[in-house]
Every structure is written in structure tokens, then in C-alpha cells.
Length: 372
Image (cartoon, rainbow, N blue to C red):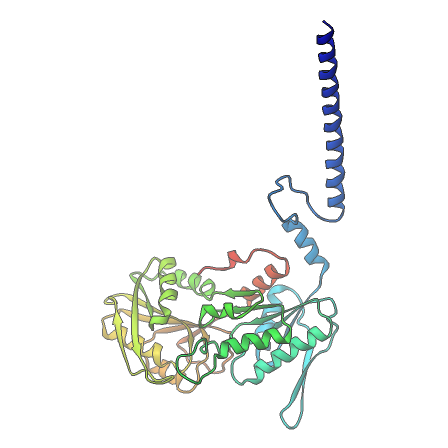
């Protein structure tokens, strides 16, 4: 009997201890959660998750910062549209030019502690690239919190590898120059070679022109559509467009002995009786895309249209486009041109970049901005 009473007392004591420990645990847990919430961190019950910061917390932090969007001289026309879509005023900046050709970009307002975005495409001349580098350096020296380079057209991207002896890898050099200047992030669109992202050791947001072109093409309601790659390098891009548009695909195989001159071209696939859309990332002299268009018509295509994100359009490009079988050419405004041929339709990328800048600034996911 005594043993039973002793056992019962021990058991009761254990229960009391467990009960007290559970109360202490609840109090500590509640106090810990209140402490974390006091500093803006949401406590997760699932401790396996490493991050405690929610999107609401990140947005609150973003709102406490101030964004400043500046422009280089070459891309001011596009930046004006970007800030209009974003709903802010463009930052004040200017360039002092000396008589010997030297120039000195500057900011005409404080950027200390600000989130700075500098919009500048790096098409020719090389002064555009140098101006961007100088603006980044100026922002860092003025104590900007972070500096993001928004480069709608990334120049020198064709130099992504050594195809022959004794040449540079220009795209890698551009990445090194940007990083050495102090940039924290790069935003660009339709790189000539996607692997250029790997040349950087900082975040690179690579946007796709398909987000602009696909809705436009869908609204055209073209039947029997066929997407054509103008060369083997554009096959992946053409396949992505064909998948999203539920279209057939064909590929042009070209041979060239030197830059901007195509010696011969053959088409792989059937384009007879189809509405053809040739897709490319950039048009320089328009030799490749116009030859591909004419070849498609010779092989029985019903209509031929084309699209290109970056309208470099140097030398005889406009004349070739006008004389070609291309019925309509879609481009974006990453590169400015005056007096474009009537065949060319310009779709602005300003809203796309404005939305992307907002997502980056608020630390939101960028994946919804990508179609390809």
C-alpha cells in the first residue's frame, strides 16, 4: 500500500512539473514571437524555413527607401516613358562636355542612401558605355545605397566567345567593367547569348522580348502560323515562340565567311502555304533576316513577317527591309531611330521595364515577368 502511495505521489509530481514546463514554454514562445515582431520579423512555426521575412515585411522596407531613376543621354527618350509608367519623376542629371571630346556625367540631386537605377543602352558609339560606367561610379561615390544598371540593349554581346585566334571576348570585358565600376545589379533584355549572364558575379535579370511580342501576335489571329529561326543560333528562341503560339517551326541554315555577309542559306522545314514569322534578337545590316524572308516566299509561304527585339539597323538595313518580302517587322524601342520604314512597327518596352524595376525594388519575384 505504501509503495502504491509513493508511486502515486511521484507520478503526480511529474505531471505537475510537466504542466509547469508547458506553461513556461508557452510564455517563452509568446515573448519570443512578440520580440521578433517588434523588429519587423514574422515568426514561422515551420522552423525548417530559413527566412523569417515575408513579402509584406520586404514591401514595408522598400517603402521606407526612396527610388531614383536616372538616364544616360543615349536612352533619355526611353527613360522618360519608363518613369511615366512607374509614376515617379526622372532624376536630374547632366553631362559636361569638353572641347577635346572628354565628358563628365553628374547627378544634379542627392542620391545618398537612395536606390539608384540608371537606364542606358550600350549601342554605338562606345561613349554610351563609358557614360554608364561614369554614372555608376558617381552614384557609388555619392553614397547611393544600391546602384542598378538598366541596359535595354547590351552592346558587345556578339563577342561572347573566341571563334578565331587573337580576338577578345568583348562581352566578358563589358561585364568586368560594369562590376569594377561598382554596380550592384544589371537588368537587360534579350542578350545575344544567354550565357553572358554567367560572366557576372552579381545578380542579372535577363528579360525576354517575348513578353512584348507574344500578346501582339496573338491579337493578329493568324492561321496556319509557322515560326522560323533565321539561323541555327536562334533555334531555341524559335522553339519557345512556337510552343507559346502553338505553331509549326522551321530553321534557316546560313553560311558566312565574314561578319554581316551571308554567303548561302537553306531552309529546314515546311513553310508552304503558311503565315511565317521570323524571330530574332537583333537586326544589324538586315542581311540575314531579309534573305530568310525571301527564301520563305520562294518556298511557298503565304505571308512573311518578322520580329526583332533590338533594331540596330546599321548601313543598308532599312533599304534591304523595304525591298524584301517582309510584310511587317516588329521591333522594340531599345535603340532609337528616326524616319523608320513604313514596314516597321515599334512596340515600346518602357512599361515592361517599369514593372520589372518595381518588382526588383520591392523584392518581389521576377518569374511572372518571363514568358520565355
